[in-house]
Length: 76
Image (cartoon, helix red, strand yellow):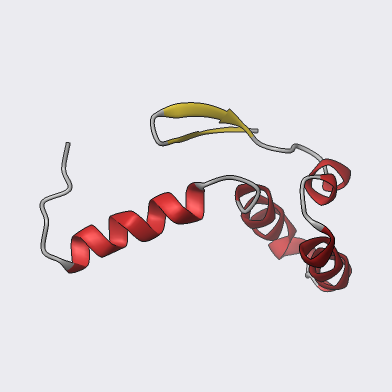
């Protein structure tokens, strides 16, 4: 899986094992507790969320929302 973060193409972990391996021990424990209980229909979204959490995507989103809250025009 690939996405663009901060203008750069980023390769995301593409398997459950790769996602887990990219997490620190504390987050891996949360992942291990959550994933077996995610309904099958929701699994792709949950895995995408976890894969994105291994990047700076959350920080980039938070910065964008802060700019929007200040009333900035964020269209580029």
